[in-house]
Length: 239
Image (tube, rainbow, N blue to C red; front, side):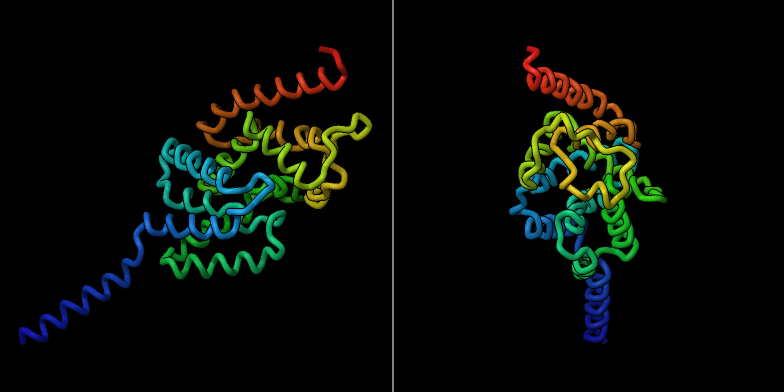
């Protein structure tokens, strides 16, 4: 009888362990490893320095918004791993990531949320005919990502990305594109580095959704505007 009780207790413990699986700290460590594997060698401004800043900011914004930071942080780590400008096959990248999250004990609901967030936070999706309405977690992660595209870091990243794609720095005869479609935005042949500021970066501050991001964006927006004023002045030898 005593032996049967011990076996019963053992079965309960094993079942409980299986149900519990990895804890949140272990899961976050796992998604970080996944991102390092996918983007650790990135040379377009989407490497781990960018990812780590977005993660830190997403956690800060989530706490400020009263949201559990677990899913926002996981999504922040993964937000560029299925980006159409960084991966050859988006569908395959999504399938691989979904499987990885399942293997590391993420709940189905959390996987769905993470995949929805990272599939829809790109600026390009705001240019679609019917822009997608983000959840609160989506707003948190997108704001965190966009904050890294403005200010001093944003300036460096824009130049870094443009250089990686052999864009011109500036051409006064090439005007910034307006009312772009998603596809036109992705066509880098029609873009210069400076025009990218007007086509995207300068617009981001007004598109922030969370209170924390809006506050931070005000200063970073001023940094952008000061930089462009100085750039145009030096380009024309007016200073």
